[in-house]
Amino acid sequence: MKNRFEKLFVTSVLVVGGFLVSIPFIWMILSSFKPEREARMMPPTFWPQEFTFEHYINLFTNLNFGTYFINTMIIVLFAMFGLLFNTMAGYGFAKFKFKGKEVVFLGVLATMMIPAQVSMIPVYLLLNQMGLTNTMAGIILPGLIAAFNIFLIRQFMTTIPNELIESARIDGAKEFRIFFQIIIPLSKPIIAVQAILTFVGAWNSFLWPLIVANDQALYTLSVGLALLQGQHSSSFALQMAGATVMVIPVLILFLIVQRYIVEGFNTTGIK
Amino acid sequence: MNHKNALTPWLFIGPAVLLLIAFSLLPILVSLLISFTDMNLIGLRNWDVISFVGFENFIALFQDSLFHRSIVNTLVYVSIGVPLVIVCSLSVALLLNYMTNKLFTFFRVLFYVPSITNIVAIAVVWGFLYNMDVGLFNYILNTLGFGKVPWLEHPFIAKISLIILAVWKGIGINMLIYLAALQSIPRSYYEAADMDGANKLQKLRYITIPSLSYATFFVTVTTLIGWLQFFEEPFVMTGGGPLDGTMSMALFIYESGFQYNDFGYAAAASLILFVFIIVATLIQFTFNKSKEN
Image 1 (spheres, one colour):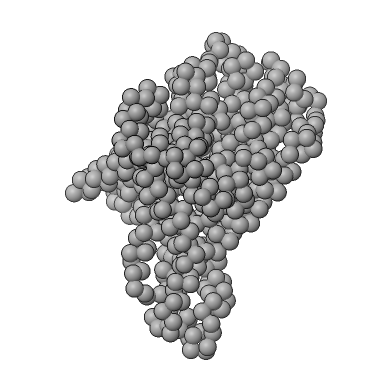
Image 2: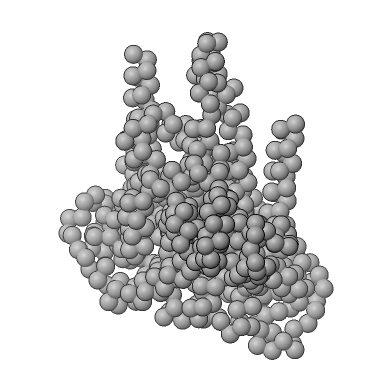
């Protein structure tokens, strides 16, 4: 009897908490389909009385969101190359012995301590020196490598048996063939999780595009949305539509793959 | 391990290491250098006009009342936000750990979602919710008989408003860390406690919480570092206002650097933030060690 009461209590606390947590999302989506006047109405309507797509059309026809979307996808694409470099480095640190390995690996880990807010000024100056400010390359390069990802991938790859690599070498396989045909297929679980997190990180990237891009043609969705918020500060329904465009793709992707992420945490060694 | 060519490992780690040197290690050196200069927009085009100014930037920072304000605000963010994130994410994790079924899996996803959502989008949405005249929060308070709350219009309340939003976003990832830790506590501990007749609260106090000390340590350090860099929320929602009430150190650095193009000054401020982060981390580590002993 007591147990049943407890179950009911825990469940109802979670239901209330879950509802509170989802209010911003619910309100964002509902408001984005209301005409501006209705979105500002007091008392507000819950369900849109007059259902409209005008804000979404406006975003993509007049407000450059198409360009921002393409730029964001370019960043996502290159972030995947970054993931390849991270994976290669993880393999290098996991499965090779070489002079100076410990020092280099410690150096890699040390970069985790350096926050973006500390490196943003010097990185901007360096990019400027290389002539990369206001270019796509300048936006992409600073965020390409993540030491923490190298660390996680290395941890996973140390569990791959050396004999597999050795016998491939004896069969005369080239090093990069071993990497692509043996190591990567064996590391699928960790790479899948990393690929999703890399996608989310690149999709959400804000600081570097904000600093490096002066030209609206190079803006990403998040920078474009911040700009929209500044320029149309009282067009709430329009802002909600912009936010929805940013949030929904990640939400859908996450709902499809959430099992791997939420469970992936058990295998990343944080216990 | 045998491999013929000593270069092979470097082919694998080379690209990542080079990029890290270029965009992580080298910048710290550059930052150290320019923080002692008067580097600005003119200096960016013509290096000859940059001059060495010694500790002038640091002295000016210690006299800059806006920088003081940003430090105080950041400390307020950290001292309220970090404990709140820990308490909330631990509570949610404990509740979610109570049962395993479809509904609880759904809630786990639901509480995690804010942490993968774009921070600019979140700030835009919450900016609407917090709006004094047409926002949902004030409407709800109004129907409950309360007056209008100046969520983003009052220097102190605005800080709290930003903290609420950031806690909402911060629960997800830390809750997952706690859940993983909870699931690794051996069942036998609880069975032994049951035999001794311990009640639920005693089990929580003497088994669960102590077993989570490593997770708590990890969550505290990462959350602390994250909150010291509080940036996007004030940047998008308040621009540091009202009356600089939400100005954070990170936002101060951004504004000095990219709005006033005072790169030397901004670099000096960023090094002070870096020292804050290192000190906070070291304190955490020593505290954790002494607790273990």
